Image (tube, rainbow, N blue to C red; front, side, top):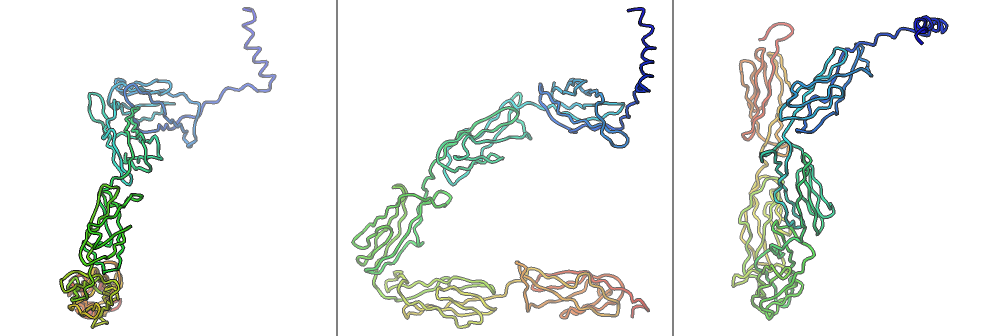
Amino acid sequence: MSSSRPYLPFALGVWCAAAMSACTTPADPVAVASVQLQPGLDSITPGETYSSWIVTLRDAAGNTLTGRPLTWSSSRPEIGTIDATNGAVTGIAVGTTLITVASGGKTAQAGINVIPPVMSIVVTPDSFDLPLTTTRQIVPQLVGPAGLAITGRQITWSSSDPGIATVSTTGVVTPFALGTATISAFSGGKEARVRVRVRPEPVASVRIAPVGSVHVVRLGQGRQLTAECLNVNQQVLTGRVITWTSSNPLVASVGDGLVTGVSIGQANITATCDNLVSASVVAQVTPVPVSSVTITPPTLNLQVGQQGQLTATARDSANNVLSLQGRTVTWTSDNLPVATVSPLGVVAAVSAGVARIQVSVDGVLSQIVDANVTNVPVASVTIGPLNPSVVCGQQIQLTATTRDANSNILTGRSVSWISGTQAIATIGSATGIATGVTPGTTQITATSEGVSGFIVLTVTAPQVGSCP
C-alpha cells in the first residue's frame, strides 16, 4: 500500500487528461450581497422556543442564493439564547434581545420579545342564564406571574354548541335555541370556560292594543283588542299563552280579546301572559250620542312638505269618551293651498301660511285648530361658479343655491351678498353681481336666513392696459 501512494497524483492527472479536461477547479461561489431576516419582531414566553425565521440571501444582482451556511447570535443571552446553527431562540427571562444572522460577511437582525407567560384566565361571569333575544358580554382577564394582569394578548373564543349559543371574537354571546353551551376563551396555552344556559325569555309586561286606558264600546257592539307579551326590552315574545277576563261580564264580556257591550257601564278588561303578568284597560259601554268634539293637539306647527296627525275625540254629555267607529267623521281645511287634511286627520303642509282645521263627528263640530306652516329652514348656502375670476373693471354674476338639511334645493329664498374687501371687488347686495376693482382676491359671502356660504373671488388685471 505505501509503495503506491507516491504515484496517486500522477495517476489522477493521467485520468483527468484522458477525460479531456473533465476535471476542473471549482469556481468561487457568488458573494452574498445582502441578508434579509423576517419577521422583524416576534414574541415568546420564558421556556418557549421560536425558530420560524425566514432568511433570504441575495447576490449583487438581486438573485436569491441558497445552500450558504448561516450563523446565529443573541445580543442578550440572559433574555433569550439561540442555537448558533439553526437559529432556534429559547426564552429565558422577560425582556428583549436582538437576534443576528450572518452569512458571507453580511448580517441581518430582528428582535425577540420575551413576555410574561399567561398563568390563568379569569372570566366574568363564569356561568349565567341567557334569555332568548338577548346577548351578553363575557369579560376576560389574563393573569400572569405573581397575579399581575396581562393586557394586549390575543384571545380566541369558541362555543361547544353554536346551535345553542355562539360567541363573537370579542366575547359577546348570542343565543339561538334553548339548551346549554360551554363558551371557552383561549390565550397563551390557557383556557377558561363559561357555562351558558339559554332559557325562555321571561315576560316583563303586557301591551294591549289599540293603545289607550279607556275603550268605548257601544251597546250591543264589539271591539277587538289584542295583547302582546313583552320582555324587559319591550320586545315581543311569541308563542305565549294569553288569557282574557272581564271584571264585570254583565257590562262587557270578552273572549279572545273581543269585547262586547252588554249593558251601560264600565268593566276592567284584563289580558294575562303565561298566568303571571297582566295588563288591564277599561271598557266603557255607552249608547249616548256625541255631545262635543275636540281636536288634539290644539295647534299644529309644520314645515312645508311635512305631515302632522290630528286626533278627534268625541264625548257624550257626561264627558265620557266615545268610539268613532261607525260614526261620520269629516275633516276640513279653510286654506287648501297652505295645508290639506285627510279623512284620517293627517295634515299635509303645502306652502307657508296658516290653515284653519276643523272636524265634525256625526254633525257635531270641533274647535278650530290652526295649522301653522313655515318654510323648511335653510341649512347651507353654496356659491357658484367655482373659483370665480373677473378682470378689473368688469362684472361677473354669482349665484347662491340654498339647501335644506337633506341637501334638497330650496327656491324663492332671499339672499344678501357682501364682499370682504371692497377695494378688490364690490358686489350688489341683492343681485350677486360682482365688479372687479383692483387685482387681488376677496371673500364673497352669501347669506340666507342667517346661514352663509363663502367663496374667494379673484380679480385680475387686463391683458392690455391697466385697471380703470
